[in-house]
Image (tube, rainbow over all chains, first blue to last red; front, side, top):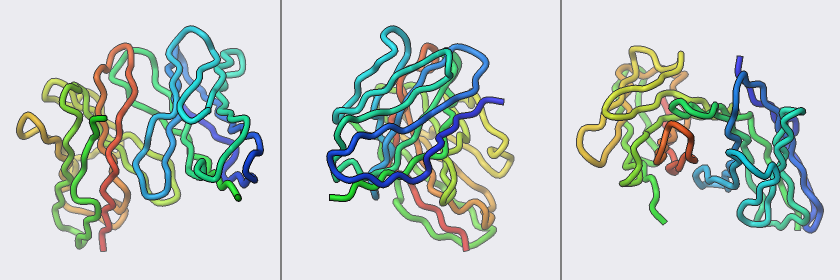
Length: 114
Length: 115
């Protein structure tokens, strides 16, 4: 069965600390990968996406993610977090082609302390 | 930037009542979706809709659920007889493409509380 795992459920960091959120997927095919962010009281927003090409993708607000096919991973990173990064982060996967049923991970709540 | 809009933001209903959740997708998008997130759980796919018909649905989307695009702009989710376990945040999303992939754009969600 298709699945997405996010291993960190709640992460607390001080401002300026580096961030890495893990995401692993289990899919039987070629995938498109996404990270979405949900700020408190707001809707899900796309942070970055990987469809093909350079496995290191850069998104908005200084975030990046690296697709490692051999590890079925798509970890999210940011070298220096800010208080405004406090949010919930969701890794998501779809099979390439098809009608884009998106499978989400359980989410990681990030709390950045000033 | 164009947005997906959802109304109402919060709906409270009694068990057994019908509810209709409304969404206005981004105007040039062709694919529409409903997802839901029960408090503390992951975001779950309900249904996708393209060319005026359901293209895929999950096990959650049983006979109590239906979707409709009644006009050129709205996309609705109807729950015929709500149950307590239908309480969740319901997100509408739209995308330009299905095949080949394009990101989903989500609305702010409707919080449905069934009492």
